[in-house]
Length: 350
Image 1: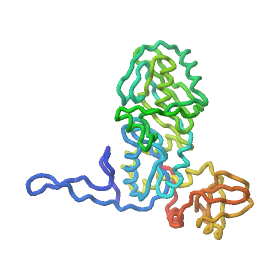
Image 2: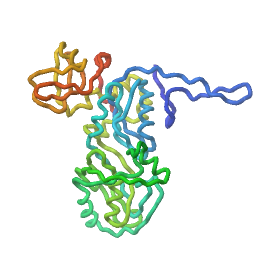
Image 3: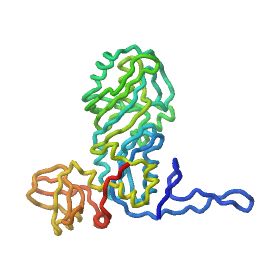
Image 4: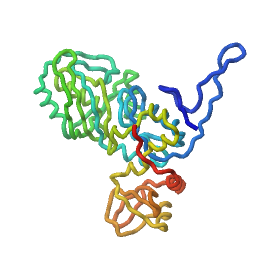
């Protein structure tokens, strides 16, 4: 039976009906909520996160549509940002931390002459200045923000200070000290720019290391130009090996049957493309899954994806030191069995 899913745009955690019944006095009372029968689902869903939805809300909606028991994401996108958001289900959640270190690519629109409290269009205007720089001035300044740079994280971020997210302090009107962090901008390309008039802005493409805040980058560029700046749009177009063209939207998922949604899942080891594969025979498979180190003639490798005797039987990650295969994150035997029993997984056309 087709799973129609929740109403479009629902924000609350999804898991039942919000229908109401009429009581004896003519009022309404909530109808009993229909519980979703959860099931083990393993894989990676490349979601094109929509504008205005938090990463967690997008995750919960996708989890509801797939009826998955366990899910997580690989790093958040702001509600005002769109684009590539890999969602991990089941066994894939064990490797989501690995993807947090992946390089990212963004496209953003930077508005010059106006500074806001949040560094984007959501905040209040805190300063306005005339825009006097030329295209040549802009090119010189952008060179200063290419390569290794230092950034002070924004107050409106999920970074923790004494156990609380910075945005919680910001909402309370409290400014806390933040240390500058080292990040790297691999490429900063201007796709389009207008450096004159009241709507002076530029559209940029930024390839960067983990931990880079594009809002802060836009603000810092505006500061260097002497006119202030903020972001009016932000889209993540790539993260690690995953690109926006591979992603599926929530609207498309809602229109699919459950089997079609499952076909959108990439295999768990799509998170391990930079790991060296090592194959084990049946005897060593069971020993490795129990956490025992194995010896072989393998060269040293810091990142290894370990497979069992059966094709596609991912067992977990490891490292090899002096010919010794040292277990890292391991799948459980039931997870291995469930993945092998699942139908072949293929990338869904968005």
